[in-house]
Structures are given as C-alpha cells and as structure tokens.
Amino acid sequence: MLDALIQGILLGGYYAILAAGLSLMFGVVRFINLAHGDLAILGAYLVLFGVEILGLSPLAAVLAMLPVMALAGWIMQRLLFARALGSGVLLPLLVTFGLGAVLQNTMFGLFGSDTRSLGNHIGSLSWSSWQMPFGISLGKLPVITFAVAVAALVALQLMLSFTKIGRAIRATSSDPEAAELSGVNARKVHRAAAAIAVALAGLAGAFLAMRALINPYAGPTQLIFAFEAVVIGGIGSLWGTLAGGIVLGVAQSLGSTFSAQWFQLAGHLVFLGVLGARLYAAHAHHHGGWRAALKLPRTVQPRAVEEDLP
Amino acid sequence: MTILEVENLVARHGLLTAVRNVSFSVARGEVLGIVGANGAGKTTLFRTICGIHPATTGTIRLEGSDISAYPPYRRVAAGLAMAPEGRRLFSDMTVTDNLKVAGENGRKGFWKIDTVLDALPALKPLMKAIAGGLSGGQRQAVAIGRALMSNPSVLLLDEVSLGLSPIAVVGLYNSLAVLKENGETTMILVEQDLDRAMAFSDRIICLLEGAVALHGKPGELGKHAITDAYFGLGKQVATRA
Image 1: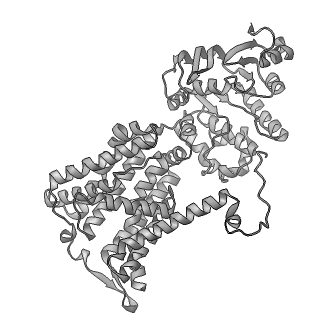
Image 2: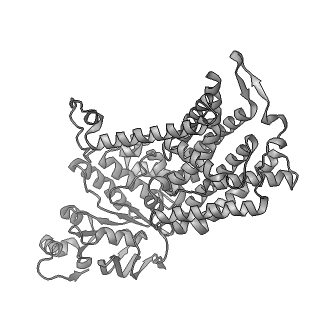
Image 3: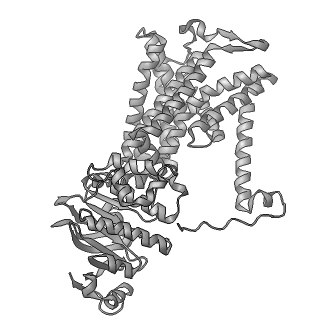
C-alpha cells in the first residue's frame, strides 16, 4: 500500500506537467483547449522524430522539441485561438475539437498507427530503480519526471512572480481590460501563455512516451487526465495542478492494487467525488451555507456585506 | 496648448447611442470635470477615449496625433491613462506589483514608484498588501497611482469619489490637488458630486443623454445652470467655454 502511495505521488508529477499548460491557458486566456492531449502526443512524436530520424540524443530531442512546440502554441493562438475567443463558449470548444482531430489524423498520416515508445531509446532509465527501505523501489524515470514537474512549476512561479512578462500574465489573467489600460498588450500575453502551455504539453508527452506506448489517437485520454488534475487541484492554480495530479495519481495507483481495471476507474471516481462535493458545497452556500444544507440551526449571523469604506 | 482633442465622437451600445457627437479639447495642465446623471454617457465616453469601447465615428487626437484607431495599450504608450470606474485593480497582486505592471508597460518619465509614493503617501504602508483586501479609498489611491506609473500626459479619472467615505474623498482630493499644482498632468475627471467637480475643475462639461448639454468655467456657469443641465431642465445646450 505504501509503495502504491509513493508510486501514485510520483505519477502525479506527470499529470502536473500535463495539466499545468491546460490550467495556464484557462487561467490567463479563459480558453479550454480540447486539443491539449493531442498536442502532448505531438510533442512525443517530435521527440521520437528527433531521436530516430535526426539521430539526436533523447535529452537533446526534448530540448529541441520545446521551442518548436512553444512556437506552434504562439502561432495557434495568433491564427486560431484568438479568433475563436469572444465568440461565445461553443466556438473555442469546436475549434480545438477540430484541431485535435486534425492533429490525430496528421500524426497518423506521418507516423502510422503503430504504437511507439521512447523507452527503448533511454536505456535502463525506463526500468531501473532505487531500492529503498521497507521493500519500496523508486523508479528512476518517475522520480525524474516528478523532479522535472516541480522544477517546471517553480520556474513558472518565479517567472510569474518576478518578471515583467510574468506580472503582465497575472494582470491579464486578473482583468484583461485593466491590463490593457495599464499598457499591457493582452494579445501578446495570450500568445506567450499559449506558447508556454503548448511547450508544457509537449514536455508531458515526452515523459509519457518514455514510460508508456503512444499512438496518434492517445491524446483524448491524456486530455481527460489533465482535466481531472486541473479540476481536482483548482482551475487556474499552478500548485493546485501538482496537488490535483498527485491526488489523481494516488487514486489510480491505489486503484490498481485492487485490479488493473481499477487504475483509471479509481481516478475518475475521485474526480467525480471532488466535483460532486464542490457542486454540493456551492449549492449549499447558495442556500445558506453548509449548515442549511445539513439542516443544522444557524448559530452565526451572516456576515454583513462589505462596505466600500476606508 | 491643446493636448487632447475629441471631435464629433459617437459611441453606441447596440441600438442605443450612448455618446452623441461629443467634441471638446483640453489644454496641458488643465483639469476638466465631466458631470452628468447616471446613464448620461460619462463612463462610455471615457471608455471610448481609452479604446476599450469602440467609437462609431469621431476623432481623438493626443498631442496632435490621431489615436482613434489605436488599441488601448497603444493609447497608454501615446500618453493616455485611466483610473477606471470600480478601480479594477489586479486583486490577487500586491500594490507594488499593481504599480509595476503599469510602470513596466507604460511610458518612462517622472512617475516612478518613489514619486508616486510622494504624491500618494497613503500607499506607503500598503505596498506589500494584496490589492483585493484594501478599502475603497485605498483601492482608489492605488488605481490613481497605477495610472500615473504609465507617465500619462492626460489622466482620466472615472467616478473618482464613488463609494468612498467623506474622509477618503477629502484625502483623495488632497492628493489630486498635489498633481494639479504640479501642472504637468492634464486631468479629466468624472465626478457625481457637483460641488467637488466645480471646486476642483478649471472647466466643466455636463453630459445629458450622451450629448454635451453645458460647457464652460464653473464660476461663469454657476451651480443652477449646471444643475439644470444635469437634470435636463430648461435650455439644453449652452456653451460658454
């Protein structure tokens, strides 16, 4: 059980990388990208292309893939996403759903339908582990994935907190109109956010291809995991995605101890449980708080409406 | 010397014309007060000048340059800044970061964090505070400080005293008086409080149903004429600029 818990936490690192981009796009651009999982798979295929066709080392291929994906994100935001924004809720969903279909079929056309993996290109890293006390083994790849996730989130946090573009991203996320009135070019900020988000998706895809088999149609499943991690951790929260990823990873890992089929099901059930609890809490709050929801007598007066006084 | 010229500006909300052929100009260092009842088009006029709301027709010139087609951030770069209605602070960010955003993305010039704090000393103890937790008066001071940080040649202040306590309003106008004495920053302010607007402004424009109903110096117009124009009583348009 302890071993499953630790494996779940480490798996959460992968989900955090995958979900961080989705969360950033929603938090800053207010845009739900249904092609996020497909972009992760595209990143994986680009790394495979770098390794198998160009003869790069896996690390060099990953490092080369990141700016390519960032550029793709920038261009997609410039030419596609920005045009769908402001046209209601449905259009961005349809546009990114269509983009996902295009990406899947393009990858199918270019790389075929065979399952592929980076596992055989990274030597013993894909299977070797460190033996810990109590019979626990820590896989080197999951530990590296988790460390990269934390490093990526720390780097993002530092960028958001201490740089000009970071402050502009936070300002645009908070109030795009007020940001423009402060001289921020919100469109450029959106492109920067999309570039970061798509690069993160590509990074997640590279780690996925190192630990599992991928095919051109594996994106939607990854999108579901990313959504679940974002929703569990809190939409738009950077560190929440790590927490959400860990909760999802632990749920899946513990579920798999019962049966292999429970790996995914346990994660989905936890996601539904968290979502249901949130909806219940929101409903209860709307109708007088959790005390009212549980039919308990109200002992505390409702807080007065905050006055706009100094 | 004229710094901002607005000519025949028209702005609509769907079928409703919120701003009707509004024209005025402001000289460097002048304070122009815009008054009018709720729904008179004051905020839409400001939002149109800043580029947040699209103008249907009309021209806006800042320091001789036509900025009518500029997006909002380019108008800021050209020298226009607004402290919007409702303050619109970046509520999850500190006061320092709120100021830095405008400082980093606006024009460079006299206004930096130090000089803003000299003009708005109430901000000094609040620099590390999260903007969302501030009181109304504090938020308004941050909004004005943030607008100053972009070093505007024209500062638009929308609903300056709305929702503030009388003490906060006095403190705020004391700070604005410092800016006025400085003479470098041209101010256009929307103010619901007629007495305040008349006392602080060099000229007054009264809007009625989106159009200029009265325009002139407060001392020459008198409060009765402004009040009549404010509520649409009597003769609708009288200009004594």
